[in-house]
Length: 115
Picture 1: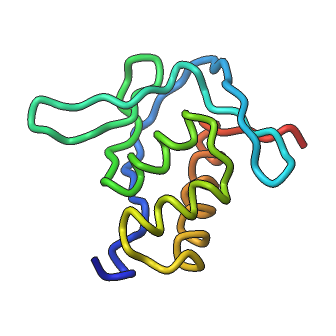
Picture 2: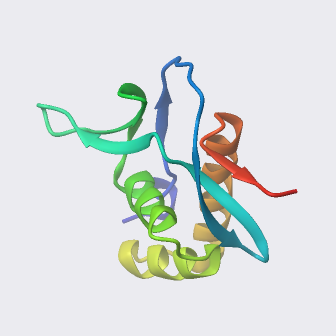
């Protein structure tokens, strides 16, 4: 796999609802995932992230792996290391892509920190 293909990719759909959150840690900061968000597989085999039953993101394999690890409560450092091994990509590149994906999730209020 080439480094350029690592980027977590998500397609955004509009939605609106109140979100409950699940906590995990990122570099000493508590991050929270929306409890109403879950991964789902479509009839044609694509993976999507649903919020309150509505499709929000279509996700590639990297995005699914990152979300799954966040939901399992892994630290960002643990996620970076596991993604690097899983996809055979340098950890420095992974760290940048994971941070960007988390920023997208934060922009969509699917991840929130305690600051």
